[in-house]
Image (tube, rainbow, N blue to C red):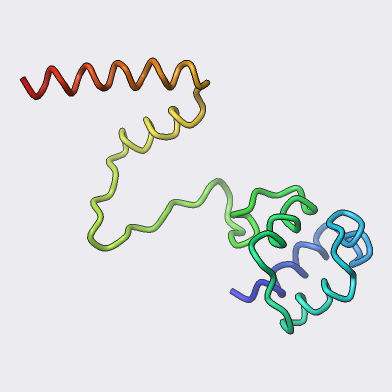
Length: 115
């Protein structure tokens, strides 16, 4: 994917001028132009600013599908089962206190299993 082209698509879709992106990010309009034309590759910090300017999550700069993308399997790593992925997603949404409770219960359960 050419990030400059993607940024231009996002900007056009929202009917933003380069000047509007400049106001939203603090990046110079000429820099935005250089990125869109492929003359400059933005840093991760700059991409984060651009994602905020478009009111997007960071991953959405690179992904145009609907919903969150599924991470590809990494060779040599066992994929998580559906239940494990669901558990991880629920855990991410919990408060710090609830996460602590779940971790205590998980530790107790794994200790019982080892005995």
